[in-house]
Amino acid sequence: MNPLKAELLSVALEAAARAGALLRDGRPDDLGVAATKTSPIDVVTEMDLAAEKLITDFLAERRPADGVLGEEGASTAGTSGVRWVVDPIDGTVNYLYGLPSWAVSIAAEIDGETAVGVVAAPVRGETYRAVRGEGAFAGDRPLRVRPAPAFGQALIGTGFGYLTERRAAQAEVLRALLPEVRDIRRGGSAAIDLCDVACGRLDGYYERGLNPWDYAAGALIAQEAGALTGGRPGDPASGELTVAAPPGLFEPLQARLEELGAWRG
Ligand code: IPD
Image (cartoon, rainbow, N blue to C red):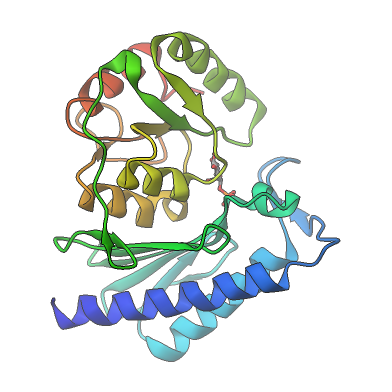
């Protein structure tokens, strides 16, 4: 493996392990909401802030010339061509309620392209990782998507944003899609949903309105496990729309989401 990518992977794994341990072992029983962001249900806890600080301090020590973009406000430009994209807790509402599906998501971009992705899900006891061109793994286990099922047999994950109007539009898309597929899952962590596509625990996933820190690491892990990822037809995955599924399901799912206007709202 290219030595820079190997170093970034090892730094990302260690940062995610340290933050994951802090979050799992240090969660106060009376954890409350520290602040709200884009809407009253878009919450941040003291633990999101503590975990982001742990990760950005660690990155500054190990890779001082790199840039950082973090969900809770970390933003430095850097001079090395490497930028870290960090979600200290993806699935904050699950974490707040004590539900197990939350993750630390850390991606490293080299010259604007995601090269390394790590998603640590401590309560699941699993850490997913990928290096572009080198495959995706959980521990020693190589990850592989499930072969594409017929559209009507597909188990599809999705999620909803925090803005009322967007949620209403997302509910309309869901109303049309639900009777057309096997079932829908709303796990509450986009990063884990993408890793579940990589592991074959979901057939596909889509969501409107993600931020780069929600999908950067998970999308690379899904791709390296054999999924296609994208946005609207012809576009890469983005905040407008993120779709991930194996070839054979990706195309009809993306086409149906386009018909339903899943990028609206
Ligand atoms: C959220 C989760 C959720 C998704 C939301 C995201 P956060 O991230 O990934 O599954 O539906 O769109 O904002 O706020 O927990 O980091």
